[in-house]
Image (tube, rainbow, N blue to C red):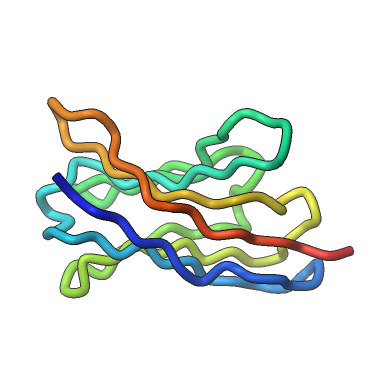
Length: 116
């Protein structure tokens, strides 16, 4: 099992930046992939970014060039740097951990609100 705790959300003006953190309760080397999802009211949860054990990354088209996912292995933490934020980025952001053979583990989410 793994527990995930997100932090770093808040209110920011359009064009601003935020950095979200996802702290894991175990070594992230033992986690096959860490994802950031987001969910706005009335919408389905959307996959935003992924980083794998090997360091490979993937992004949703809507955030490419603006968001960067990274990890600090020593701190068992995955970050999502969000730049050039837009009002449509407003959502609750969740991190999740994929460990093969187990259901996805989820954090509690952190609210990001971008004002125009």
